Length: 484
Image (cartoon, rainbow, N blue to C red; front, side, top):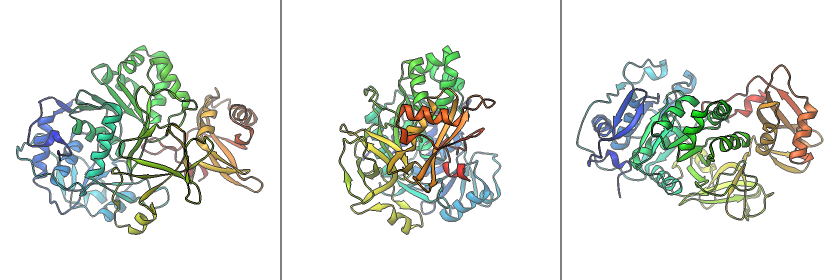
């Protein structure tokens, strides 16, 4: 079997750029040499933490851990001390790999510190570790308790990156542009390890802005990865920025993930650039599951559509009783369950949580609700806990209501939740950020707009105006915080 990251193997690849962060560029050969030197210092029996700052040292640190067969625990530099303390106590790393001169908060500073020198060199590559050995321990967002560490084996990384290459035509000629954080699956596995596996390059923007993305794409970038908040900022900037429109039009692939892309933003980008943003669906525990393919026809009701399963992934929908739902019924909403080589090994130190995450037959319970059309296309409705509203005998997905709200010219941002109602069971609540804070739209106008676009039973019964929606570092709306 070929190495997980062929460009780091003993056969030195062509001396071309691999990663660029700001003014610093490492070639494939330079990154491989630095990673080998660091790998030689790591104890293969102990995990290491990685201070996942948007710097070349992070790419070298994770590559070194993969070469050494050491599980890396990416740390979010923006996390608070309580969360960092929990992650470190749970994962028990032997050391923290950190860019030189970086100040660290108290829980991380207590670890032995290894500063990553991106200019060191070693030619000898260690042997390839087993496929089932842990590669990363990535901590979930912890919306229902302390974060859990998802143990991701090398096998899952290989399967996901190869399936995406198949779906997207990803090759060594591609130059990926993104400004995603590197403590998460999207930015780290897809955004850094993807180019290293396929032999291409990544240009990390540091801090995302539409202008920075346009500059990098115009300078040879072929792919852009982002989350909906980034594409929303792009959509807002496009009307007055011909350079941005041209740069996006010249890209081979625009990909959005980590949350549903609102339909108004998707359509605004398409109108201005002729490019459709490709959506895909994944999770920390499963890596990537489905994707729209470039060139796929735009289906009716495309909002929330995340394509068909990737190579190797088996997907089904089940109802509340665990019975499988046949595809083809647009109103049949069920929970997505998955099997495939892309799945994680389990939650670190949590055999109870690991057992609860799987249904009989080895199906992983995602907690995500969706429909499945006759062509096998998945349309995400939302999370079972926060996005599926049972009102008046109907099962209603929050996502389609959010898109209807965003279609109203007086609404800039929107989220939809349910709250208890003595008559309906749950009533639909719309949380909106007005386009003009001084002139928020009337609640009855908002409800009528949704009822006209969708159906009367899907109209919000309550409309609440906010100055901003609470979001996490990946741009996802934190719906539990809305009610708090």
